[in-house]
Image (cartoon, rainbow, N blue to C red; front, side):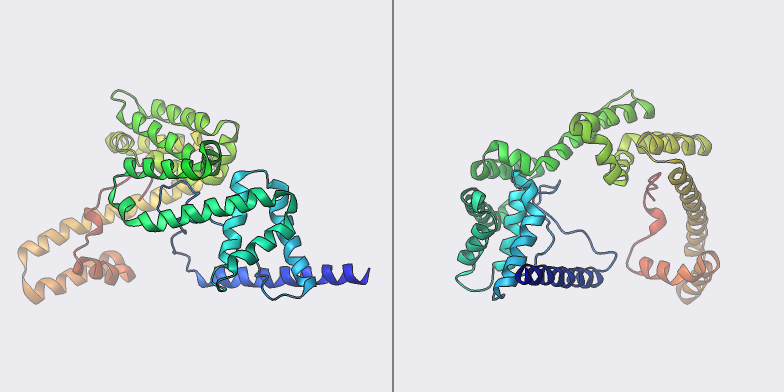
Length: 343
């Protein structure tokens, strides 16, 4: 009983350390940092690592802590270990933990696998070899892959995935990517439809999500609603039709699009407020560009610079210096295209 109590205590202590480590990692990443690229994500990036949460390292731990580490592995992965994706996430997490400890890191990793999952050891050790082979191939061919166009890069990636993991397992491991590619193809067809109107395009988009994700489509939208909305609004055909509408009708269409992708009344209200803020900013921007053009035409040198600074201060207040810095670098924000519902 005392030994079991000690193991439980150590496990709780390790969990506490892990939570502290996770908080410190999140604190170190600025809010504007881009998401890490992942080879099991929706992209066809040449990065080789599926995203996983870090584990506590098990090197040189006392036996009780080793047992707690193994218990953590079982709790996190054991119930879903029949999934090739979960198998690969486990392997990648352990590789991240054990690599770099010297020439015996792989043997130590295998011993941990055998202790944690003896019934699945043969499968998991084979999965380790597949993963290391894929990782090595990605690293060796990263430059060549980046030089290819998107379609050829995708074909090369899938050929290697299927060669190493088998077609069925590769499709399960990168299932999210496959579904996203199906939606992308559907969006290209929707965008190219010559006579479709916005409600028709939206309905076809919703149908493509249902076809790609099946019964999981509502859950997908719940987790990725903004991404799904942005992909639709970024279509050239959608932007052209929105641009051609009167303001009130455009606002109604944007509301219908957002509602059609599952946004509730509160979210719709917040978006309408943001649209109003953006419209007001662009209206000021149009006025600024007109007055700026007149100043550039009528004045030169220091007098021109002084009047431009006054104009920016009058129209943009605290943001004036930001605009000045942008213009000094050659960027004019109000010469950029207006993308309704996006900026």
